[in-house]
Length: 309
Image 1 (spheres, rainbow, N blue to C red):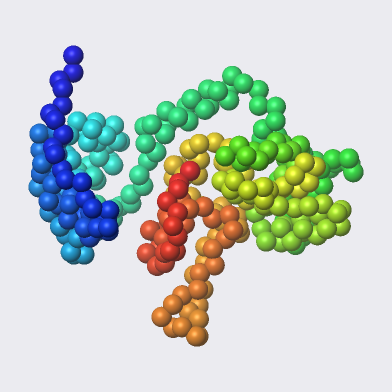
Image 2 (image 1 turned 90 degrees about the vertical axis):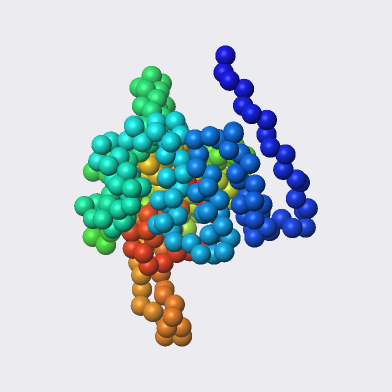
Protein backbone atom coordinates (compact mmCIF):
# COMPACT_ATOMS: atom_id res chain seq x y z
CA UNK A 1 0.00 0.00 0.00
CA UNK A 2 1.37 3.43 -0.96
CA UNK A 3 2.57 5.62 1.88
CA UNK A 4 0.18 8.48 2.65
CA UNK A 5 1.40 11.97 1.88
CA UNK A 6 1.94 14.39 4.76
CA UNK A 7 -0.93 16.82 5.37
CA UNK A 8 -1.04 19.88 3.16
CA UNK A 9 0.40 22.92 4.96
CA UNK A 10 -2.07 25.55 6.07
CA UNK A 11 -1.65 28.60 3.83
CA UNK A 12 -3.82 31.69 4.30
CA UNK A 13 -6.27 32.49 1.52
CA UNK A 14 -5.05 35.63 -0.27
CA UNK A 15 -7.42 38.56 -0.69
CA UNK A 16 -8.78 38.72 -4.25
CA UNK A 17 -7.89 42.39 -4.68
CA UNK A 18 -4.20 41.54 -4.32
CA UNK A 19 -4.05 38.79 -6.93
CA UNK A 20 -1.47 40.40 -9.17
CA UNK A 21 1.82 38.82 -10.38
CA UNK A 22 3.99 40.63 -7.84
CA UNK A 23 1.82 39.57 -4.90
CA UNK A 24 1.41 35.99 -6.12
CA UNK A 25 5.17 35.55 -6.58
CA UNK A 26 5.65 36.91 -3.06
CA UNK A 27 3.20 34.33 -1.68
CA UNK A 28 5.01 31.52 -3.50
CA UNK A 29 8.35 32.76 -2.19
CA UNK A 30 7.10 33.05 1.39
CA UNK A 31 5.41 29.64 1.54
CA UNK A 32 7.34 27.39 -0.85
CA UNK A 33 9.49 25.91 1.94
CA UNK A 34 6.32 24.82 3.79
CA UNK A 35 6.08 21.98 1.24
CA UNK A 36 9.39 20.32 2.20
CA UNK A 37 7.70 17.24 3.67
CA UNK A 38 5.47 16.75 0.63
CA UNK A 39 8.30 17.21 -1.89
CA UNK A 40 11.43 15.97 -0.07
CA UNK A 41 13.42 15.47 -3.28
CA UNK A 42 12.78 18.92 -4.73
CA UNK A 43 15.28 21.60 -3.74
CA UNK A 44 12.77 24.20 -2.61
CA UNK A 45 15.55 26.60 -1.61
CA UNK A 46 16.36 26.96 -5.31
CA UNK A 47 12.69 27.53 -6.13
CA UNK A 48 12.61 30.20 -3.40
CA UNK A 49 15.73 31.84 -4.82
CA UNK A 50 14.43 31.85 -8.41
CA UNK A 51 10.99 33.10 -7.41
CA UNK A 52 12.65 36.01 -5.63
CA UNK A 53 14.72 36.78 -8.74
CA UNK A 54 11.64 36.75 -10.97
CA UNK A 55 9.76 38.98 -8.54
CA UNK A 56 12.63 41.48 -8.61
CA UNK A 57 12.82 41.17 -12.42
CA UNK A 58 16.46 40.18 -12.09
CA UNK A 59 16.45 37.06 -14.24
CA UNK A 60 19.04 35.53 -16.52
CA UNK A 61 17.21 32.97 -18.66
CA UNK A 62 20.15 30.55 -18.91
CA UNK A 63 20.87 30.69 -15.19
CA UNK A 64 17.21 30.25 -14.32
CA UNK A 65 16.82 27.18 -16.55
CA UNK A 66 19.96 25.62 -15.09
CA UNK A 67 18.74 26.25 -11.54
CA UNK A 68 15.35 24.66 -12.24
CA UNK A 69 17.10 21.56 -13.60
CA UNK A 70 19.11 21.39 -10.39
CA UNK A 71 15.99 21.87 -8.26
CA UNK A 72 14.34 18.73 -9.67
CA UNK A 73 17.38 16.55 -10.47
CA UNK A 74 16.88 14.24 -7.46
CA UNK A 75 13.24 13.46 -8.20
CA UNK A 76 12.28 10.11 -9.75
CA UNK A 77 10.38 11.91 -12.50
CA UNK A 78 13.45 13.88 -13.55
CA UNK A 79 15.72 10.85 -13.39
CA UNK A 80 13.28 8.80 -15.45
CA UNK A 81 12.92 11.52 -18.09
CA UNK A 82 16.70 11.91 -18.33
CA UNK A 83 17.25 8.17 -18.57
CA UNK A 84 15.05 7.70 -21.64
CA UNK A 85 16.79 10.43 -23.66
CA UNK A 86 19.34 9.35 -26.24
CA UNK A 87 22.93 9.40 -24.96
CA UNK A 88 23.98 12.55 -26.83
CA UNK A 89 21.02 14.63 -25.63
CA UNK A 90 21.41 13.29 -22.08
CA UNK A 91 25.08 14.34 -21.96
CA UNK A 92 24.20 17.81 -23.23
CA UNK A 93 21.46 18.27 -20.63
CA UNK A 94 23.75 17.04 -17.86
CA UNK A 95 26.61 19.27 -19.07
CA UNK A 96 24.35 22.33 -19.09
CA UNK A 97 23.02 21.47 -15.63
CA UNK A 98 26.58 21.08 -14.33
CA UNK A 99 27.54 24.57 -15.46
CA UNK A 100 28.48 24.50 -19.14
CA UNK A 101 27.10 27.43 -21.12
CA UNK A 102 24.34 26.93 -23.68
CA UNK A 103 26.79 27.94 -26.43
CA UNK A 104 29.27 25.26 -25.34
CA UNK A 105 26.59 22.58 -25.14
CA UNK A 106 25.04 23.38 -28.51
CA UNK A 107 28.12 24.30 -30.57
CA UNK A 108 27.89 20.96 -32.40
CA UNK A 109 24.14 21.30 -32.81
CA UNK A 110 21.18 20.50 -30.62
CA UNK A 111 17.77 19.21 -31.66
CA UNK A 112 15.44 17.89 -28.99
CA UNK A 113 13.92 14.64 -30.29
CA UNK A 114 10.23 13.73 -29.94
CA UNK A 115 9.34 12.64 -26.43
CA UNK A 116 8.87 8.92 -25.74
CA UNK A 117 5.16 9.58 -25.15
CA UNK A 118 4.85 11.22 -28.58
CA UNK A 119 6.72 8.35 -30.26
CA UNK A 120 4.37 5.88 -28.59
CA UNK A 121 1.36 7.94 -29.69
CA UNK A 122 2.45 7.84 -33.32
CA UNK A 123 3.13 4.11 -33.18
CA UNK A 124 -0.47 3.66 -32.08
CA UNK A 125 -1.73 5.93 -34.87
CA UNK A 126 0.24 3.94 -37.44
CA UNK A 127 -1.24 0.74 -36.03
CA UNK A 128 -4.80 2.13 -36.26
CA UNK A 129 -4.14 3.34 -39.80
CA UNK A 130 -3.15 -0.17 -40.80
CA UNK A 131 -6.23 -1.74 -39.18
CA UNK A 132 -8.95 0.61 -40.41
CA UNK A 133 -9.78 1.65 -43.95
CA UNK A 134 -10.03 5.44 -43.94
CA UNK A 135 -12.30 5.74 -46.96
CA UNK A 136 -12.95 9.43 -46.49
CA UNK A 137 -9.54 10.65 -45.44
CA UNK A 138 -6.38 11.69 -47.27
CA UNK A 139 -7.55 10.56 -50.73
CA UNK A 140 -6.23 12.83 -53.45
CA UNK A 141 -8.76 13.32 -56.21
CA UNK A 142 -6.08 12.68 -58.84
CA UNK A 143 -2.35 12.49 -59.25
CA UNK A 144 -0.81 15.60 -60.71
CA UNK A 145 0.82 13.83 -63.60
CA UNK A 146 -2.30 11.99 -64.78
CA UNK A 147 -4.49 13.78 -67.34
CA UNK A 148 -8.16 13.82 -66.39
CA UNK A 149 -11.40 14.65 -68.16
CA UNK A 150 -13.82 17.42 -67.32
CA UNK A 151 -15.66 15.24 -64.79
CA UNK A 152 -12.57 15.02 -62.56
CA UNK A 153 -11.10 17.57 -60.16
CA UNK A 154 -9.80 20.73 -61.85
CA UNK A 155 -6.08 21.24 -62.32
CA UNK A 156 -5.00 24.44 -60.57
CA UNK A 157 -1.43 25.35 -61.46
CA UNK A 158 0.92 26.74 -58.82
CA UNK A 159 3.73 28.07 -61.00
CA UNK A 160 4.05 30.34 -64.02
CA UNK A 161 4.97 27.62 -66.52
CA UNK A 162 2.02 25.38 -65.51
CA UNK A 163 4.09 22.36 -64.46
CA UNK A 164 3.09 22.14 -60.79
CA UNK A 165 -0.49 21.13 -60.00
CA UNK A 166 -2.02 21.97 -56.63
CA UNK A 167 -2.87 19.03 -54.41
CA UNK A 168 -6.62 18.47 -54.18
CA UNK A 169 -8.96 16.13 -52.29
CA UNK A 170 -12.45 15.34 -53.60
CA UNK A 171 -15.57 14.98 -51.42
CA UNK A 172 -13.59 14.81 -48.17
CA UNK A 173 -15.53 15.50 -44.97
CA UNK A 174 -14.51 18.60 -43.04
CA UNK A 175 -14.98 18.86 -39.27
CA UNK A 176 -13.58 21.43 -36.87
CA UNK A 177 -12.02 20.38 -33.57
CA UNK A 178 -15.00 21.60 -31.55
CA UNK A 179 -17.30 19.39 -33.70
CA UNK A 180 -19.58 22.39 -34.16
CA UNK A 181 -19.04 22.53 -37.94
CA UNK A 182 -19.23 19.58 -40.31
CA UNK A 183 -19.67 19.57 -44.07
CA UNK A 184 -18.33 18.01 -47.26
CA UNK A 185 -16.72 20.48 -49.68
CA UNK A 186 -16.70 19.54 -53.34
CA UNK A 187 -12.93 20.00 -53.41
CA UNK A 188 -10.33 20.66 -50.73
CA UNK A 189 -7.21 22.30 -52.14
CA UNK A 190 -3.81 22.48 -50.42
CA UNK A 191 -1.85 25.38 -51.99
CA UNK A 192 1.86 26.05 -51.54
CA UNK A 193 2.34 29.24 -53.60
CA UNK A 194 0.77 32.68 -53.80
CA UNK A 195 0.23 32.23 -57.54
CA UNK A 196 -1.57 28.97 -56.82
CA UNK A 197 -4.00 30.72 -54.48
CA UNK A 198 -4.58 33.44 -57.07
CA UNK A 199 -5.32 30.86 -59.76
CA UNK A 200 -7.68 29.01 -57.45
CA UNK A 201 -9.63 32.18 -56.63
CA UNK A 202 -9.96 32.88 -60.36
CA UNK A 203 -11.31 29.36 -60.88
CA UNK A 204 -13.89 29.68 -58.10
CA UNK A 205 -15.05 33.07 -59.39
CA UNK A 206 -15.40 31.74 -62.93
CA UNK A 207 -17.45 28.79 -61.66
CA UNK A 208 -19.55 30.73 -59.14
CA UNK A 209 -18.23 28.74 -56.17
CA UNK A 210 -17.74 29.93 -52.61
CA UNK A 211 -14.17 29.56 -51.32
CA UNK A 212 -13.09 29.61 -47.66
CA UNK A 213 -9.85 28.82 -45.81
CA UNK A 214 -8.99 26.66 -42.83
CA UNK A 215 -5.86 26.16 -40.75
CA UNK A 216 -5.87 24.00 -37.62
CA UNK A 217 -9.70 24.21 -37.54
CA UNK A 218 -10.02 25.60 -34.01
CA UNK A 219 -12.62 28.24 -34.89
CA UNK A 220 -16.07 27.54 -33.44
CA UNK A 221 -18.02 29.80 -35.78
CA UNK A 222 -19.23 28.61 -39.16
CA UNK A 223 -16.61 30.50 -41.16
CA UNK A 224 -15.49 27.48 -43.16
CA UNK A 225 -16.67 26.12 -46.48
CA UNK A 226 -20.00 24.41 -47.12
CA UNK A 227 -21.25 21.29 -48.88
CA UNK A 228 -20.31 21.22 -52.57
CA UNK A 229 -18.19 24.39 -52.27
CA UNK A 230 -14.39 24.94 -52.18
CA UNK A 231 -12.15 24.70 -49.12
CA UNK A 232 -8.54 25.87 -49.02
CA UNK A 233 -6.63 23.95 -46.36
CA UNK A 234 -3.44 25.80 -45.51
CA UNK A 235 -2.01 22.59 -44.03
CA UNK A 236 -2.25 19.13 -45.51
CA UNK A 237 -5.04 16.92 -44.19
CA UNK A 238 -2.56 14.41 -42.80
CA UNK A 239 -1.34 17.11 -40.41
CA UNK A 240 -4.50 18.94 -39.38
CA UNK A 241 -6.46 15.79 -38.52
CA UNK A 242 -3.91 14.16 -36.21
CA UNK A 243 -2.95 14.99 -32.62
CA UNK A 244 -0.18 15.60 -31.95
CA UNK A 245 0.66 17.09 -35.33
CA UNK A 246 3.82 15.54 -36.87
CA UNK A 247 4.99 19.07 -37.74
CA UNK A 248 4.99 19.99 -34.05
CA UNK A 249 7.13 17.18 -32.69
CA UNK A 250 9.39 16.14 -35.55
CA UNK A 251 12.69 17.78 -36.52
CA UNK A 252 12.67 21.55 -36.94
CA UNK A 253 9.92 22.47 -39.35
CA UNK A 254 11.06 23.56 -42.80
CA UNK A 255 9.00 25.37 -45.37
CA UNK A 256 10.16 22.86 -48.04
CA UNK A 257 9.47 25.31 -50.84
CA UNK A 258 6.04 26.22 -49.48
CA UNK A 259 5.80 29.99 -49.97
CA UNK A 260 2.86 30.16 -47.58
CA UNK A 261 5.02 28.77 -44.75
CA UNK A 262 7.89 31.21 -45.26
CA UNK A 263 8.97 33.93 -42.82
CA UNK A 264 11.04 36.80 -44.22
CA UNK A 265 12.71 39.73 -42.44
CA UNK A 266 12.32 42.79 -44.67
CA UNK A 267 14.11 46.13 -44.65
CA UNK A 268 13.56 48.43 -41.70
CA UNK A 269 10.73 50.86 -42.43
CA UNK A 270 11.77 54.45 -43.07
CA UNK A 271 9.11 55.78 -40.70
CA UNK A 272 10.48 53.82 -37.75
CA UNK A 273 14.18 52.88 -37.87
CA UNK A 274 13.97 51.05 -34.53
CA UNK A 275 11.42 48.56 -35.84
CA UNK A 276 11.52 45.78 -38.40
CA UNK A 277 9.07 44.53 -41.00
CA UNK A 278 8.51 40.79 -41.07
CA UNK A 279 6.38 38.93 -43.60
CA UNK A 280 4.80 35.85 -41.99
CA UNK A 281 3.24 33.35 -44.37
CA UNK A 282 -0.43 32.52 -43.89
CA UNK A 283 0.36 28.81 -43.37
CA UNK A 284 2.97 29.40 -40.63
CA UNK A 285 1.94 27.57 -37.45
CA UNK A 286 2.53 28.67 -33.86
CA UNK A 287 5.19 25.99 -33.51
CA UNK A 288 6.82 26.90 -36.81
CA UNK A 289 7.08 30.54 -35.79
CA UNK A 290 8.39 29.62 -32.34
CA UNK A 291 11.21 27.57 -33.85
CA UNK A 292 12.01 30.28 -36.38
CA UNK A 293 12.16 32.93 -33.63
CA UNK A 294 14.50 30.82 -31.49
CA UNK A 295 16.74 29.97 -34.44
CA UNK A 296 17.03 33.54 -35.74
CA UNK A 297 17.03 35.40 -32.40
CA UNK A 298 15.60 38.39 -34.25
CA UNK A 299 11.88 38.91 -33.74
CA UNK A 300 8.88 37.77 -31.74
CA UNK A 301 5.16 38.37 -32.09
CA UNK A 302 3.07 39.57 -29.12
CA UNK A 303 0.46 36.82 -29.35
CA UNK A 304 -1.78 35.57 -26.56
CA UNK A 305 -1.53 32.04 -27.94
CA UNK A 306 0.36 29.18 -26.33
CA UNK A 307 -1.23 26.30 -28.23
CA UNK A 308 1.02 23.80 -29.96
CA UNK A 309 -0.66 20.96 -31.79
